[in-house]
Structure formats: C-alpha cells, structure tokens
Image (cartoon, rainbow, N blue to C red; front, side, top):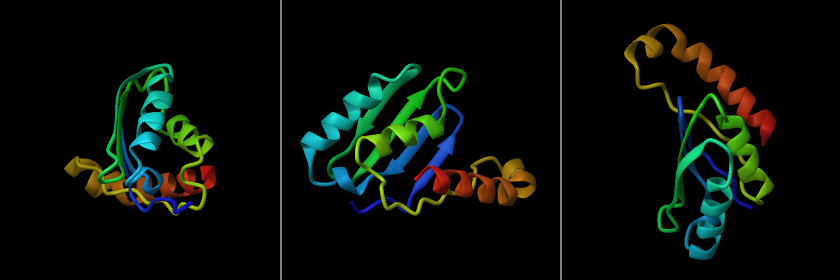
Length: 112
C-alpha cells in the first residue's frame, strides 16, 4: 500500500489523495460505495484518474477521523504519512492555523 501525502479538511468536507485507487476504477467504485453508506455522508466522489477522494458530510453526525478510519479499514492509507494544508480562512491562518495544523497532523498520523 502506498499511502497518502495529502489531506485537506474543512467542516463537512474531506479531500484526500488515495493512491490505492489511482488507475483502478473498481477500487474507486468500491471506496465510493463504502463511504456513501456511512451515516451523515451526503456525497462521495473517488476519482480513479487522479486518486483523489472528495467526501461531503454532516459534521454533527460523522467526522474526518471516522471517514479516514473507514479508508484505513478498506485497505487504504496503511503506510500513510498524511499532512494537512493550511485552512482557507485568513483568521484561521493567522491565529489558529499553525497550532491546529500540528494537532490535526498528529491526530491523523495516530489514526493511520
């Protein structure tokens, strides 16, 4: 398993690079179906060409960590070293961004 080097999280949204689906439409479809069955998930798009997965969900029902755990359970991200991107909001970038990034990175790595 190759793992991922890209995770971007916003409330109710997760975009993650999953190399295991790149070039494998069957695996991408399987992953889409499994994530779509999770409570609170509204939309899933797994792109077999790019290896990107986009998940839109209700953050009061599920969360990023549960969805990443589901990916791991499906055999993806086993040897991953995930990192987050800086938050889009300027306020978060200036005040909370650097601290939150370290906390989120460590939490993701602990799951993987």
